[in-house]
Length: 191
View 1 (cartoon, rainbow, N blue to C red):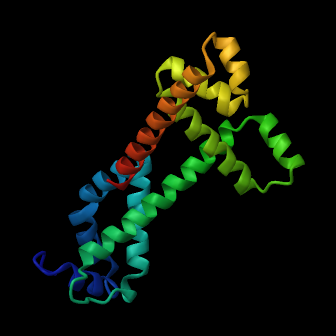
View 2: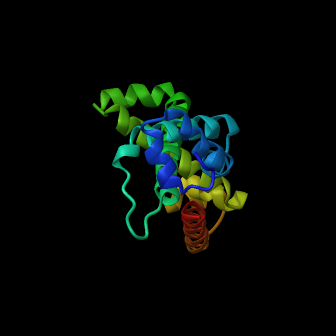
């Protein structure tokens, strides 16, 4: 087979001669690894995802139909990105479950929460803690007291030796900064 043939033709021919699929692997492997690495941030995971994506592409080769505006390349990248995102979610859930506080798990079982709810709650706490840690220390401390420890304005104001209006203004600033951080995270995720 000629290396100049179109990807779609090589894919179709590889159904009868599986060895031809290697041409597509050779063409796209490095670019796929770079793309997967951008999502997963770990070389080994990215390589595994690329291998899984190529398996999916080959297994579904008979389903691919060339349509105007949809080439093999865009279809293959879609398979790769979906595979990488799925792996990223699996890794995140696993990390969350591993880092979950045993006391949280015990309390969650008492509240009849599903494993998914436990992971989601743990992930939410982790994201919240990460965002709070990015605030200036004095604001992070006040946010923790008010939102995480559920203390009243009066108690915090007394403990921190500030007036209630000053405390409210500091918490307002902290909420504004948190909102900016959340928006920044969303923008980075979309890239």
